Amino acid sequence: MYGMLLESIQHFVQEEYGEEVWNQVLEESGFKNAVFTTHKVYPDRLIPCLASSCSKFSKNDDKVDDFLCFFGRCFVRFFTHYGYDTLIRASGRYFRDFLNGIDNLHHQIRFSYPKMQSPSFYVESEDIGGARLHYRSKRTGFGYYVIGQLIQIAQQFYGLDLQVTILNDKDNGNGSSECHLIYDLRFDNTPYMKAQKARRNMIEHTDLTPVSCVYLFQLFPFSIAFDRTMTIREVGEKSRELFGGEEMVGLNVETFFLMHRPRVAFTWDNIYILQKVVVELECLNSHFTKHPICDRRNSASTRNLLLKGQMRLIEEWDAIIYLCVPLLSNLQEMQEVGLYLTDLCLHDSSREIVLAGWQHGARLEISYEKQEERSRKLEQNLKKADEWKQKGDDLLYSMIPKAVALRLRNGEDAIETCESFDDVTVLFGEIVEFSELCARLTAMEAVTCINGVFSLFDNVTDSHNVFKVETVGQVYMLVSGAPERRPDHAQHVARAALDMQAQVRKMTTSDGENVHVRIGMHSGPVAAGVVGLKMPRYCLFGDTVNTAARMQSHGEPGKIHISESCQKHLQKDDFITEPRGSMKIKGKGHMTTYWLLGLQKDEASE
Image 1 (tube, rainbow, N blue to C red):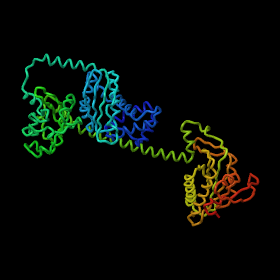
Image 2 (cartoon, one colour):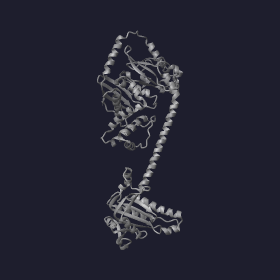
Image 3 (tube, rainbow, N blue to C red):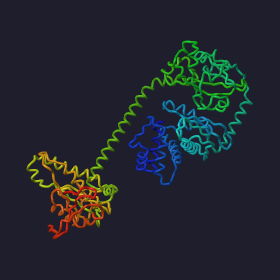
Image 4 (cartoon, rainbow, N blue to C red):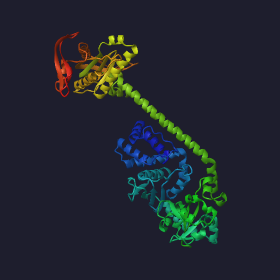
């Protein structure tokens, strides 16, 4: 299907549901950053997929079928931007005329959209209260989309209130090869009675002299007549030249032709119903190649020749005549099937279409290719923009917790993000003897060393429910329990501390010396929030932060020093702690502290 169908959906979903919902629908459908182009061909499954996604975000519990119907109505409202409303208005004086001419409209649009695989419609019967319409398509899952189109056209162009009922259910969208639906259309069909009366009057008052059938076959040189047994009775002069009419007469028409459109069985009963529908027959070249009659029929490409026209019942013959012309788009197609301009009729548009297609086809194709290339580049740029946006988000979330960042994005003031937390656990980790390390190494080697240590710490924080608050010099700070409150904050920080300690033991400096860190932990209340405008950061405030820093500074290299409040949290789990005793902490007086050695399942740390 062409992108114009998808453009209509995008336009009205954005208009009625908003840009954010449309982006969610695209992402749910797996087409994030998709840019729809009018003349680009897209997979048929996309519209049912979009309808399914829309139903998931619907606040009114609308079903998939409801959205398919909505999409169909959107398309009719949208194609007025392209001037196709004029074509619909000109297709028939009444709605019944439009129904009988849907296939003719598709045929005309085919020249603007050559890759279009249009469905087939035909009216089986009519009465004063409506009509019965058959719909056939190679696509499945579009039954309610068609209903939406019919309802909108009836309302918008003919002022009718149309009621549609599906009489059969062969469009389940389950991957079957073809869809065939019968719609019962209920509307005011009073013009049907007027047409019947006008037809009777014409028959009764016509006084022209009948003419020979020879003139009819001269007017339509590609025509074919066949009877109720589907036996060919006569063919036009060009059909004789192209297909060998002498051999065709007396044989079954299905021997030479396949019903290409509408997609129904090629039978007398079906053809009788289809007298108001454009019919396309495809030449079966296999028969002609076995019986070469003239040079023209030796063209191997006649296998692709399509005839387009109308089936009409001639009651006096008890036969149907197919009044048709070759379906050609340009000079190349005409030459491939062995025809010339002089073979085409003067009274129809066949010659003009062939010449116009030859003049403008190449230019249109170049325009389509350029437009598709622009769309492709735009999609690539959108994907790159999305990737950079993700990188920016990752960088932002490394400075500010995601939950807080989302609040800021929603318009909250930074001061509103400040909160008090009754209990969190704060960790400080410091590279020991960093001044001596800097004196011993070059500046670049020192930077590489500290970067390696902090990169290891970053990987550890990503594996646990902790947030990296900041790094100042050789000191690394993290917290758990803020901004997301959790009762097991001490356990998460303790596991992170043990992992940090284990990872650092594997590191050495460029001169082969081991790297040591000193870690301290404390649990207690804090205030936290975003501060700063130019370089906003998520900061912690309170005595708990100072105490955690003191635990680190009064610890020992390679060990994890924790406060009594932190130890009380950890004793509920399988953590191994060892009393250090009461010691004087600068600015705090005497405090009882502990060493964190590991977990019960692990070997105790030295």
